[in-house]
Image (cartoon, rainbow, N blue to C red; front, side):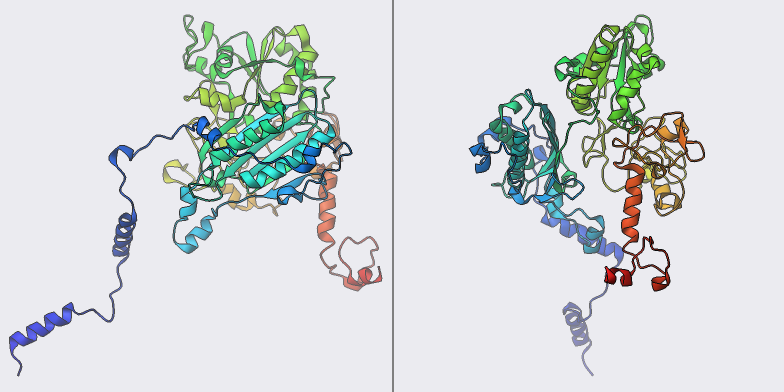
Length: 582
């Protein structure tokens, strides 16, 4: 027999020896271990730097690090009067046969796929540490660009795009340029310019290229998530920067409205003898607009002794401030018809007319046209310099603005408390859910008429690219309806926008052949077929006949189910034997 002490020692030695078969950790233990490992890899942050403020970009530092992008030789030579400049620098490719002069350039991005991150079961460190920046600007040229200058500018954009890693959209015409651009640092190295620096350097490039851009108002948005960066840059040569269908003779830009900065515009909004016209589309006005001056009066700010304060919490003279007017437009080409109506002119008569839009460019032609048409019938025409973007930066509490500002970039829509926007994947949150489980983006800023087009629940996000079947504008559809049969594009359930419901439109857009880029296919009272009412205009290019053309092209790739027995000579489906004969 062995001694008891020896047995005890052997047992202890055996226990201390490494186990050949490890015990599987519980879920709670694995979670705790993962948390400890994550904390051990973190670099300690000093207490005074634990909550740093967002740094204000130093413009002098940007200028100090600026290195200009060389102007291509074909532009320097100035021999492009024949319009033969080859727009191919920077890896530019043609956008497509439908827009032969437009080009597209791919940019460097980061992976932001939620599904991919779940599969890898780890966070994308590259995505977390990099930020993107945006710049919005427009510039009208006086005198207008020659066609050769337009092509030279497009060529220069393609050269700068790769160096500055630019994404977004550029509209170029003889009138000037209109741009929404983003950038993302191509590397996290300290030697590589940041996204903010890229856009400031790009602005310097433009000023060096032409003095036309010396006074351009560049509106920058920095420290945005990396997924706000565009995956490519599209350069589009167009006839008008904003398509109103109005020429320079009918609305000279030199005769436009008075440009007011945010503070002065705010004071004008508080006047009872003013009207404020939203020159954006109706679907943009549904989720946000300038009618806070009237709302404040309704909420108790209508005392006779009340005056306008700097933070915009009271209306003047005991009234309701400027009267908000929504022209109910689907697109900018609806503006001239709206202004020509007698009831419109009656609303504007003897009033101070204020106009506003997202960034200011849509007001330029609209204010000039309004002044040309009404002249002395109104008591002055004014427009918001820099648009809603500038106003939100000036009034951090929102001022007279209510709701979200719809934007044409990856942010989707922004508010004063969410400058990065609501763009991206819709994620349900318990604190944000309604009784039936549908999610809203921000109840604090949501307007009363922002609701789902199907179930009428509160909703203020344009997701899923769903459009009205009757006029083609984006529609508000909640995530619940989007994932149900109502949101299924192959389903025959009609999707109708708020404006078509108000106007009683009953004719589908694909049943009408639109002309003049979707404008004036019929009068407001007339309809098609059985006497239904069609929308005044559609947002999608081509309208019904373009949809039919797409359907025929898609059908021509599918084999006919009757095969060689098909007797229809005009059958739109694919017949191998007929193709062989041809």
